[in-house]
Image (cartoon, rainbow, N blue to C red; front, top):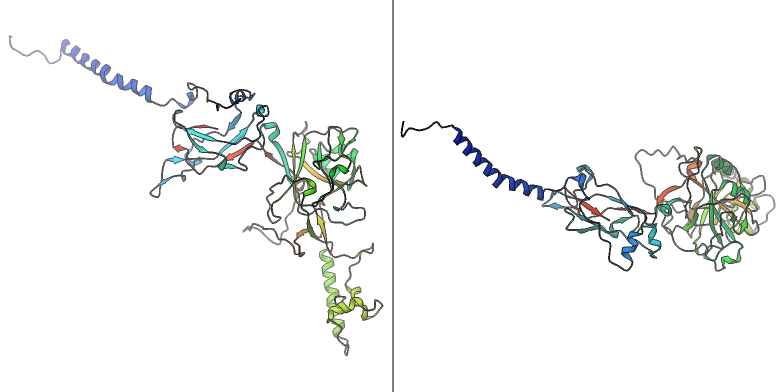
Length: 490
């Protein structure tokens, strides 16, 4: 009928609704979707693909120096952590609450062989951060670097260094013919990789040049007169003006040694830190400017001390049993040879010469046992670079080192500078100017048992540690940024 309403759903109505929806999609939803494509961050797997190269500093020769690195990544960086537990959120706070700003420790390894061409002496780290690769800020520099504010080596080859810190006291003078520090001296470090060579060297008390060439893969050291001497080291044959032993692949201290094939570079540097500390801070002073110190050595064993104490008690009891005996000058000390008058009195038999015969610990060679103070070399660090493990399976995971000494009168013959095993005797200990022992600081441990003495394997006593001189750690006190996308550039 005319004027009646049509059906609510027909073809025209559906087409009109479809047109309205399509119009809304193109005019509202599609622009929003395209805007999201532009502003949304790039997925992490596609990072660094659409960005230009990081610009080098525009200094004289800086661009050319950056291109001559020879490797794809001159600075290798530890990966950015992806777990929140690996980040430090304590670098920032707001009203006592933790924020979402964080930082973390970064390890940086330098491997740029072209720096030597540009006469670069010292390389410092600078760490920059960004969240969008557009705005950058400095988050760390050399003030946050450890163990040094600069890279101590510029390539992975030169930075592959093994170090060993010596004991505080050298070998005490126990026998005739032992080299003394007040004379000319050669100190040689011998690097050993194979356990078989280590076992043979451990059993030798004296070596010659052929033994050094046979057992040592790397060798080197210092020479001259030490303990603040004014004598020139060039007076010694095979010694340089820098107090180092002249070394080549086939020669030792200026002498050609058949069968020698020394590799690597060996350096000996004095530890300037206090003897109370276990940490070694090296000095650049030459060997003749090293500062020597005194050490106390007592060759009496625990059994000798007990026997001496027993004799003292028996002698005291005998004296107490003699009635009417006048008191000697200085008390009982005069009888034991401790008073001034006893030393000037008759040395014949009887009490006038004291009772020293009851207490003297005389060895079979006629020498008297007892404490003695002698001059020792300071602690020093042995650094070996350019030495790699030989082929095969019979090698140590890290090399071992022996310290040897020689003199002009014993040229070509080498003695061990340190003693490995003192048996039942206590090893020598450093003393101050008054002769009192300098006690080292020992960290307390709840599980430490004083009844159990510490055991040390002979091979571990000569062990060396790997110190990567081309690597440093960045542990900043500032925050890198908020938790989320992050770019770090060193």
